[in-house]
Structure formats: structure tokens, C-alpha cells
Image (cartoon, rainbow over all chains, first blue to last red; front, side, top):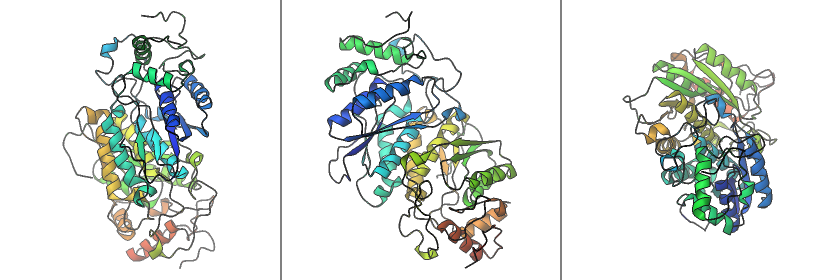
Length: 242
Length: 242
């Protein structure tokens, strides 16, 4: 998360892109900083397959050089409402979101995703990875915190060929980590993100309409409200605005 | 790599099992230390598919509680003779193996494999992972060194639910890291590993016979020679002993 600008091997950046609002904004940040964009989407057996479609729309709109979508079935390990048959929690009060690690937590997800990004970065000879994690208006996941990002950077310094050869160490950019959801939304608008293309819901309809009631929807709705901008999200019928 | 024995949530261990000699020995070490074994094999688009068969034989012989074989196509990122169309180097002199990072290096492989093991450990509530990396008679890969294992342990302490909740931190056991290949072979014999079941070759025949000439074969042959025990490896016709 330190900002080095010297000794980069090139100006490619690998950006983890889920199709949600946060990762779309991280992609736009990487573009704004002058990187050539290599978007990486991982289909990990999540319920919300329609997120992949959102990722494709966002990648195209922001002009990525390459978009890799790869499969990794995290369901073999079980353990999360996002990949298992456990029900996604609904209607949690916004202030209670993040107090405990919820059942939607996918074990080791960001560690796995960053290691895959690191593999691609290494073959691209890229020194930069962007990830849209967020430590404030997040859902209480351990792997969304600054100390996690820092630890991963220290790991990368000893894990990679470039690191061992003393070349440009890998830098993990988490540009949203200290922003609130409403700040992320406003920053996205500045950067030209079309939020209507993104999908944050943990339990969308097969057509990609948001449930409006899971933790991700609750935080996103509150974000648009606090930002004072219209919410372009397409909600399912019956998901009345709270 | 520190040896804690307190505060474990249970006595399950996730063991990364490739089907090679080293990982088979790591599995046997975990068994000898009294762990219930959860073997994890990742089919990552490597040329040596027959390694998976070896992993299954080894897992069964050592009595694992569960063996998960999961797919992850690392070929989407390119960059290695093990997953690409680059030729596997042959007939390198043993003393020259490991001097440079070779083309068989798969970017970020052990980081990815350990994060997958961490995901499973977290759902099993296991505090222990075994990996058969080896820093002496290795092939010069950055992610086979003690500093890599230590950095991963530090990452795990901030990346996981158990870590955040202050429960048993994840311990990464790398019991072979400071052994020579011949010491690993002798230790394996002590622990009851049937080396004839294992396959180390980077370029085996479709029937699972070893080429005898890639870096992995050269190191393995030399190991049996130095250990002074018969080499049970099935070599391809024409792979004469050097």
C-alpha cells in the first residue's frame, strides 16, 4: 500500500473485478492512474453468477486490455452462505453489519484471489495489483483490512521471482480501503463508473435484479442515500426502499 | 513453522499432496504426529496428469480421512514449462539445478496452494497445514524457502476468522524444508512411504513412467543413490541410469 513509483517493470496492472460497485471503482482508479488494465474475474461457485455478466460489462466499458475469467470451485471446501446452501441473511440493521464475521464470509477468499492476481502479474511482469476491499462500510471480513493487505505485500516480496531477484516488488493497491460506501460512490461518479452496470447483491435474481435486503444491498442503498445521488440499482419487485 | 501445541481447535491437518515423493513424505509426517489427514490435490493444468493418480494411491495408502481433488487452470496466466508449451529442460547437471529460477517455475504456485489449503483448514476448523517444500535439493523456486513459509504464516494470522478472533493461529508445517533429498527418502522409508507409488517427474509418459532426465528426476535419482537404497521409480525405456 506504500506508493512507490520507481523500478516498475511496466505499467500493467492486474485488477480483481467481481462486477460489484467496489471493484468497478478500483478498476476506474487504476485507469485514472495511467495503468494498462488486466482484469481478473474468478467464478468461484458463488450463487450470484450474474455478477460475472456485470464484470464483463464493466471491463468493456472501462477499456481493459484483457479480461480473464477463470473457474475455481470453492464449494469443495464449504463454509459460506455465498457458496453453500446456507441462507443469505436479510434485513440486518446497517449499524449491525460488520459487528461479527457473518456467514457470507468465504474462507480465505481474498488471499486466494490475490495469489491468483499475483500469478498473472508475475507472467505479465506487472508490479501492480488493485483490489476493491474496503475496511469501513464492509461486512466484517478479516481479509478486507489494511493489515491483511500489508501482510500480503510482505508475502509477495519473498514469494515471487521479481521479489527474489530484487526487482520491482509487487504493490497491492487498495484505493477504497479507507473510504465509506458513499465516498466510493462519489469517487466512482468522478471516475466515470456507471453504477447501473454493477451488481453488489449476495442474492440476486437470475436476471440480475438485486434483492435489496442482504448486507451488501443494505450498505449499497445506504451509500447512495448518504451520497445524495440517485440509486440506479435494479431491484427485485417487492424490495421496497427502506 | 514454530511449534505450538496449545490452543488447537482440533487435530485435523490439511496436507498439500501432489503425488510426488516430497508431499507423500509430508503426509506421512503429519500422520506420524497424530493428525487426522485431509489431503488436498490441485489439478492445475500441469502436463503430468498422472501425478493425480499417484496422489490418489498415496492418499489411500496413508489412510486419509478425506481427499479433495480440485481444478484450477493456471494455464490462463501462462508462464511455465509445467503448464505451457515450453519444453521441460533435461539433463541439467545436479549441481547446476537451483542456481537460477528455471522455466518450470509456476508463478505463485505455492502461495495459491497454501491459500486453498487455508480455506479448507478454516472450514474444518483445523489449525495445521503441511506442505512438502524443500529448500536444499530444490529447483530454485522462491516459494520453497523458509522465509516464504514464515511470511505465509504471518499473513494467515491476519487473514482468517480464527486469527482475527484470537483463536489458534494457523501453523504451516514444512517438515522437509531443511532436509536433503536423500534424507527425505530415508525419512520416508522410516515413516512407511512406498516410494514406488510416488511420481516426481516433470515430463512423465501417459502411463506414469518417469523421464529420468528432468530436474525433478535428476534430483530424485541422485537422492536414492546418496541414500544408498534401491530406486523403485519406473523409468521410461531409454532413460538409462546416469
